[in-house]
Length: 171
Image (cartoon, rainbow, N blue to C red):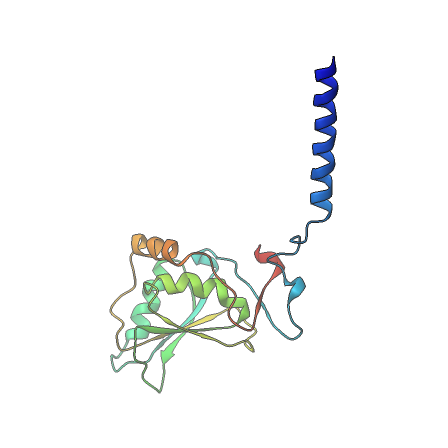
């Protein structure tokens, strides 16, 4: 009988500790915009499906028709291609991804198609969720599905760029 009383008393004490820990939890808003400084944009870190990613493809090389060819490849991979064209200034490197707070997750996915070698160009003033893909002189081809999956695994989850906070929906 004494053993049952001791076990019951220990269970009640454990329950009290659990309730106190839950009530006093200071990490309830971790990963949300609760501690975000005023004026900082909320970055959408949602890793979207390809069919939900909107892109513009621009050629910044001296290879004619490259943007149209790559646009077709992205369309075949179920991306939404809005615009295709040429840039006036050439770009060194594989590619540049230009995006705003609403395109952070989409840019993260697109970067995997360039094996994480694309330069990111974040603009906190940009309000749309479209990502501009600017093809550079070192661009050869888009990654295969296996390579994309490997790159996504290597890079981890999307992160909020400097000067922004994760949006509450991006938990």
